[in-house]
Length: 112
Image (tube, rainbow, N blue to C red):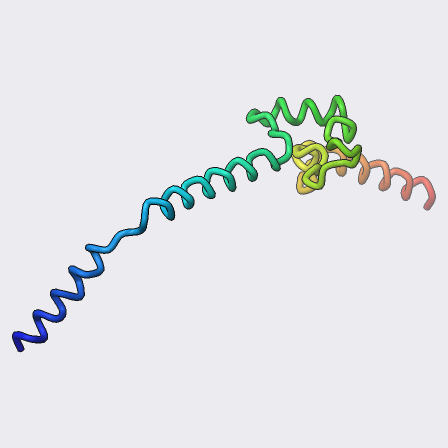
C-alpha cells in the first residue's frame, strides 16, 4: 500500500516539475501575436456602431459605399436593415381595407 501511494505521489510531482523550455514559450507567444495581427489586418472595414448611422450610409450611398478594394460589393452587404420594419409586412391597414371594401360594395350595388 505504501508503494502505491508513493508511486502516485511521485507521478504527480513529476508532471508539475517539468516545464516547457523558454524558446518554445517565446515561439508560441510570437506565433499567437502574428496570427492575431494577420486576422485583424485581413478583416473588412468596420461598420459604424450606431445602426442609424449605418442605415443612413446605406440609404445615401447604396452599394457604392460598400465596395471593397477590387470594386466588388462586399459579401455581407444586405441593403437597408430596416427595410422590413419600414414596409411592415405583418401590419394590416384596417382603414384602407374598409374603404376598399366600401368602394367594392358600392360598385357591386351599381352593377346590379
